[in-house]
Length: 58
Image (cartoon, rainbow, N blue to C red; front, side):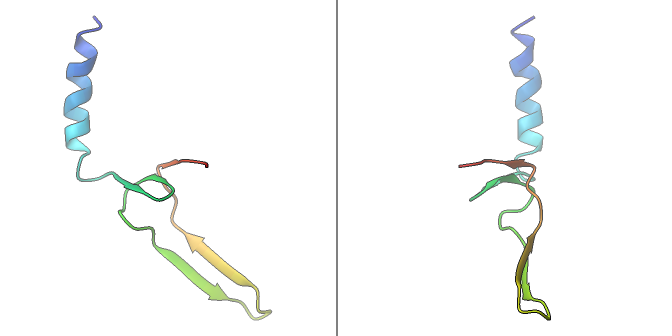
């Protein structure tokens, strides 16, 4: 039964090879994170980025 697991895992990894990227903060669906940076009317800086699939905390 343990020998079947790698045979199931390898095709899944090959299918996701072009869809999953490692970026500086984790594992995401895009190679570079799209962040929107702006200042609001009070002068407070905001940075909104899209979420990663898996975030690696340092």
